[in-house]
View 1 (cartoon, rainbow, N blue to C red):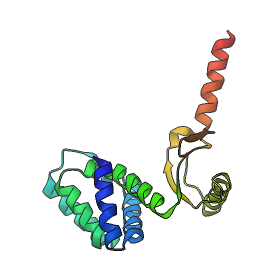
View 2 (view 1 turned 90 degrees about the vertical axis):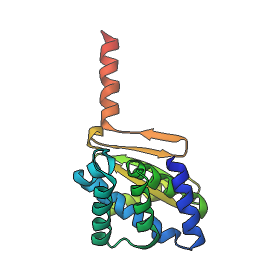
View 3 (view 1 turned 180 degrees about the vertical axis):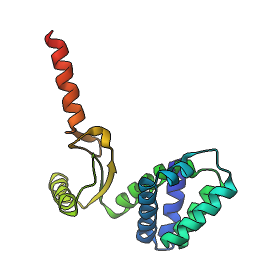
View 4 (view 1 turned 180 degrees about the horizontal axis):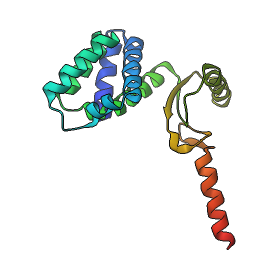
Length: 177
């Protein structure tokens, strides 16, 4: 379902030549969801009615200055009771944009927010691995990995998280008994 919505939005954005502006607006809204537990609850919870969600989403869109196609799309999925799938829709839209532009999409999971210098270094390293293609980073923050990072590019995944390393040590110690 999320893929169909992402595809429909991409087609509309491409027809209106607004692919980049819609991506920017959706990423801004996604960042707001990631930062606010209350907004995340509003988006994910079926407890809130359509009218309440629509009022809240409209107020947030106005405050965040998100307008045009992205704002209309967010209102439509709210009305259709599909707001719970928004983050997956945004991920699907980003993947479609990356494919359209010939970019490689990479999902990065880190324990805490990366600095701009670290993001640039990561992009550079991934660019060299992918044969010089532009990289579209989708960074998620998950404190549960403790430290390090998990990188997924296409079907390849590198997990250098501290949690994984600790689990492998724990397993090795159990085997040694």
